[in-house]
Image (cartoon, rainbow, N blue to C red; front, top):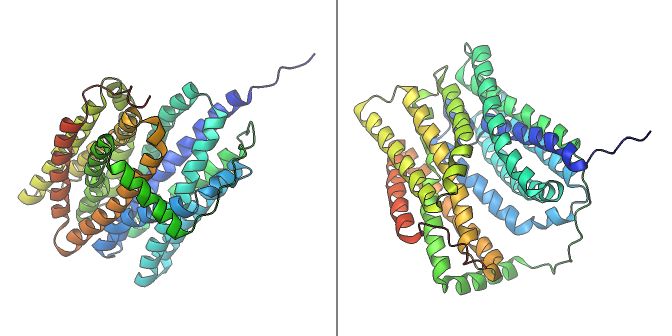
Length: 424
């Protein structure tokens, strides 16, 4: 009697679901935008540094795109490389925790800057490898299903662990409480790595044709040539205007967290409330935007930008009238921002796929992504400087104004219905 072999795709489905859920929990518990911001403020590190974390991470991701993207195609066993990447990210977060507990202030600043920079490089390469592996391992329907399940499980798991950490550490000093949360995130990264090692790779990555190595000068020349040709296209100018309007809007999560950290970093429930709100936002975002995306990308964009504008106005008002001591208002604002930013990211990608002609899709994506990242680095550095020299609320004012401007641009430039024939 013979037993029928198990389909590798069916075997991989629960493993990859669990691995993605662990990764989602890890990024929530060790979130640079929320948790590390609270940790930095509780250590009395410069507000400029806390606001600059997003810029550091995106700068690292840009360098990774330019110089390390070829590592994805050369990896002989992608699951091994992904597991090593998760362990390396966990080690970086643990190094930050160690510097927090045992180091002096210069060592802490160095740990934050170097740690986030290395994490940004590793995460960008890992994201490409995960996309490549899942594309080869699972069918389209399964990929879509596990994406939403991972987000839901990750949100529920993060809430449970945040509450547990709160109960265990509520009598400890603020920086110790926040360090324990980051350490839990690092452990979840290790669990994600162990889960990935259980995946069965159905095939080795396909052999790619060897590309001629380009010098940095050649890469820049090629980028400028592509950019010049694309800027002559009306569809690209329209898409880039929409994408650039989302740059400042996307800073809502880190700067809404920063204004909360500035006021509540000593509270025993401040960070817990924000973790729960961001995790709940992740749970709600998936089914909400999936339903609305089927109706119209413009509807998602308008809803997302106006949600952030409304949340920003609420934060500004409560800050000015002196009710900023209520952490629940800050948690609610971060919840709304998390839901909105998730929807805007999805709608932007779908909008690009709808309007980009097939012959120009790859070059347009590379150019727009690079310009967008440079803009994020510049604007987040400016916002961090404003928060440091003036008051964080002025950075929130800028984000609120940018959200209203983005809503107007989306209404003017994005068609009510998807232009699906444009990419044919």
